[in-house]
Image: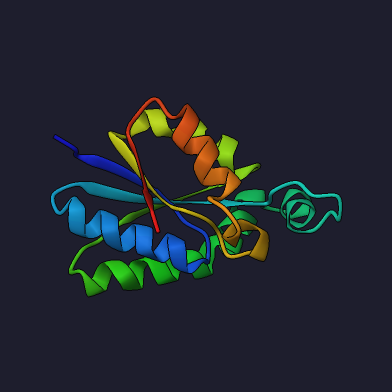
Length: 139
């Protein structure tokens, strides 16, 4: 029986679909939405802002806020509540670091960028190939 479901979520439509699927397919399970912020980049953007903040945890939560707000709205539409969690780093790696705490993962097939739309996203593929628990990829 599946009692704990991880739904990695960004601000993409595919991530929203994944959450809706998880809520419908696992009505009795505890759903945790995980958002990964601060992916390192050559431009020193979000990752640097979070790392240099007086309170990096609070900064990460702030960056994840819009995603969590939308996730809670979707859950409320389904008459459910969800847990939320934020972490920093490379999305695929960060998600894989957490999957062992769950019975299954439900993930969107790709994120919101044009490059991600051209094929199953790198993050979804990495999680699908390396996860020790079952993964459902939602399109």
